[in-house]
Image (cartoon, rainbow, N blue to C red; front, side, top):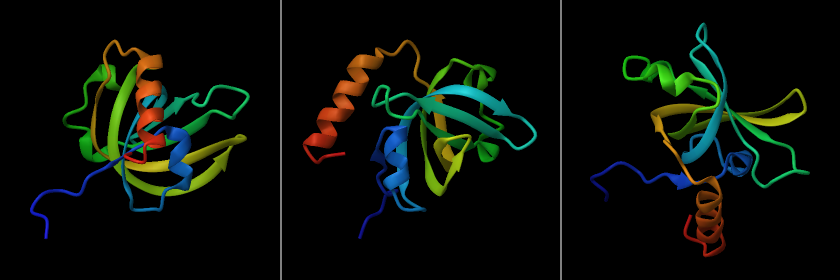
Amino acid sequence: MSNGPSPSTLAFINDLQSLAPGEKVRFLGCVNGYDASTGTLTVHHAYPPPPHACAVAFVDVNILLSTLKSTDTQIGEWINVIGYVQEREVKLGHKAVRVQAIMLWSAGSIKLADYEKAVKERKEAGSW
C-alpha cells in the first residue's frame, strides 16, 4: 500500500498514443498554440525526427490557470507537463492525445538533444 501519489511515466509526446486513458505521464513539449476560451495548450515535439509525423498533445490547463505564468503559454516555450492521458484522436493528419495537466513548468534553456538521448536510453533500459 502506497502513501504517496502514483508515479508518472516519462514519455515522448509520440509515445502518448500507446498509453491507456487515465495513465499518468510526464513529457516535454514546445507550445504551438493556446486557446484561452477552452484552456487548452497545443504542444508538440518532433521526436523521433522526420520523416515521422510530428505528434501533438492538447493539454487541458484549466485546473492550473491560477498558477500558470504568461510565459507558460507563449508559442515556442518548452514546457514540462505531468498529467493524465484522456483520449486519442487524429487531427489535421497528426496523431494527437488529450492530456489533463496537473502540473506544468517551464523547461528553461533545455539541451534538447541531451534530453532526447536520456529519455531514449531510459526507455531502452526498460525504466521509463
